[in-house]
Image 1 (cartoon, rainbow, N blue to C red):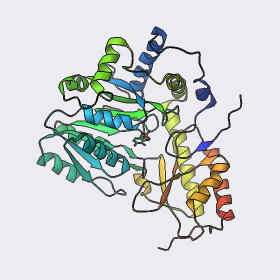
Image 2 (cartoon, helix red, strand yellow; image 1 turned 135 degrees about the vertical axis):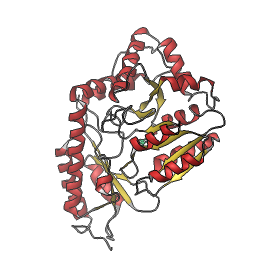
Image 3 (cartoon, rainbow, N blue to C red; image 1 turned 90 degrees about the vertical axis):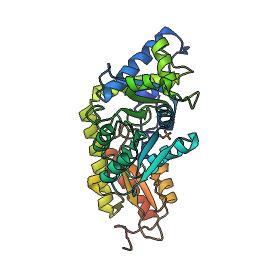
Image 4 (tube, rainbow, N blue to C red; image 1 turned 45 degrees about the vertical axis):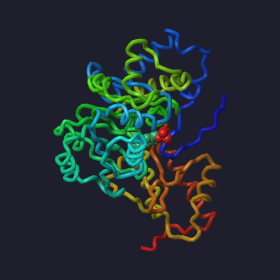
Length: 376
Ligand SMILES: *Cc1c(COP(=O)(O)O)cnc(C)c1O
């Protein structure tokens, strides 16, 4: 069977291999069968292994949903009564965490920084010193909205010195940029199958400390479907998800994991870096400007400023590229006009070179000047 290969340069879901696509086509099975439970057990172990977690200390808990379910689960489940969450916020995804807190009525401090700047460690220390009730420090590893890499090791260290649990949204780095859960001072991280693992939407997972999950059994239950302890406990007792798992997505993820181990952590990260560098090279040749300083970028998302050219119309450029098999994505910064090109997925340097041929063609077609112009 021929499946058209699209190059997704959006920040997930990512381009998948045909083998991963085809792995979804399996004989019908009831997920309560022993055979399926065994698969989920292996899957959970592999997810911990990717971040080099000691299986005695760390576990993974699966959920059926897109990546945002992890943010919801961690925040609503891991906060003891009367305590507070400190959100280190320099972008759209940490703002999403703040919204989750406000929806649940959880006490939180939204420590905001500019979207194009690294968080100030002194301000984080001060917030922690000022408020002994902070029990959770939360941030995003790679702010996918801009592509900035946050200093999680330092933030985690500060959290731990103040006896707080450190939760990191690693959705857009997991299984790409190498993570060592202990060395990076992470207590909980998260991702979903459609990003770094290069599988499909529907399976999300939280990886974290068993001891903290077990302690959270006595914390207030704020959600029925999205409680971390309840899902963990059900898994430990039965080997199953509490409610119906995304069966086909799990088969695809198992194939994606086989491909992950075959490619290897280092080689995979080199490939993403190759793609990322090719994106920069292509942008440089056309004269585009980045939003985030290069040395601060996480190596996976490039956020690009629209040129000041009356003929630049992102929608039209997007459609031109899309019709030729290349998907580019709008930005996620409220105050400025940007678009994004991402290095996720089963793609390599030649795909980026071909993409820039198409982008150049699109720009010429619509009369956008090359190199692009900026008024300042
Ligand atoms: C993709 C992503 C998510 C999850 O988004 P969904 O649309 O719910 O899958 C969460 N956090 C970050 C940093 C992401 O990049």
